[in-house]
Amino acid sequence: MTRKYYPSLAAEVFTCRTSCGLTVKVVPQPGFTRKMAYFVTDFGSVHTDFQLDGQEYHVPAGIAHFLEHKMFELPGRDVTAEFAARGANVNAFTSYDMTAYYFSCVENFWENLKLLLEFVSTPYFPEESVQREMGIIDQEIGMHEDTPDTRVFEDLMKIVYNNHPVRVPILGSRESLRQITPSLLESCHRAFYTPSNMILCVVGDVEPEKVAELAETVLGTEERPAGKKLRPWQEKMQVEAPQCTGKMEVAMPMFQMAFKSEPVGTGMEAMKAEVIGDLAAEALFGESSPLYLELYEKGLIDASFGGGFETVDGCAMLTCGGDSEDGQAVCSAILSRGAELAQEGISEADFLRMKRSAMGRRIRDLDSFDSTCFRICAYHFSDFEYFDFPAAYAEVTQEQVQEYLKQVVTKERCALSVIEPKEEKEK
Image (cartoon, rainbow, N blue to C red; front, side, top):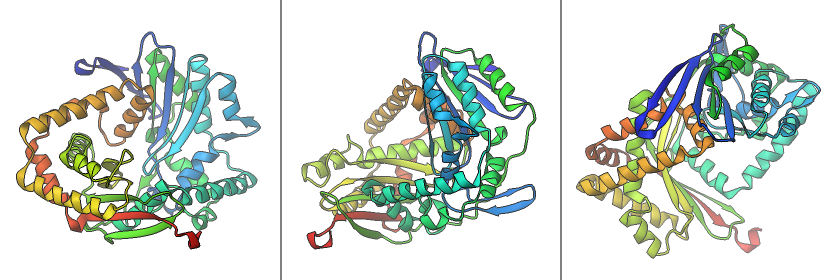
């Protein structure tokens, strides 16, 4: 394994690529009893079009999430119970562009790591079990549809994007759910749950070489090609519609708004673009910004308000939201302030302060094993070594942030989603 030390972060990362193509990264934490492992595939809800073995696939929305559910089932075994018996907490999640399986424990780490590698790499999709899972996920879709925070964001994605699959909920729909078959699950697993499309990240007091050796023992030595993702996502930078409004049983109105941004790509340039977006968000509506204080004092926002720069494979956006009696007024104020910043710029003192603050937050996040594993894995799929982020901050300039605000924070790129309380007679 190769070792790289990061002096500014007082951290070291061990990396190797096993003979089966799996990337393994280990961040040693000597003296800590808790250990954490993430086993992640570069396959999320937006990846519904791909080629495998010369054949083109167009699979139903929600299949990545469905597959995540099904991976916890092995013939005659209860995976979750096995982890619990070994003192581990196991879980998983599906995002727009990756699926992660992870556990943490203070004992029996090697047994738990072996189990993680085994169950994620073993496809088992009997028809009866797949049908049963449909009912479970159907209920989950219903719960999400009744969750205001989810609804306001998913409604927003539908008016920001016209073609990119981020406009489709991660869980898919009840209609797409019923198109999923054991055969399609098998094809997705074969395409994307191959080691060359995955990463294993471990944080804790462990021997890095032993992690790689165990991975190779469980996963074998044969490297298989992954499916080739197809991305037929042609997007204009203007939003599809400026606003949408829904009604739900909420105590007060809530909103989410977004400014559509160019995709960030990969590598260091992508990381710099993310830093620029983060700093633009902080300058525009961050908690230390003049606008935040103004909106708060007027009662237009409260402690629920927040936002930042978001990226997904093939798209990016500046977002914010929270509870507000007048989301449109907040949106108008942010647009106005964006125009001022684009014209006047950001003072050097404010820029350096924001940079230090943003860097500090990222460094503090590394105290969390969970956050460290997640970020290492997510950025790996963007061809970026996450612990190199200080270099990206060092290269970003005030002028770049100002130019971003000028280009992105415009009416044409802005969309607003609002959820209003139902009237008494509508309930």
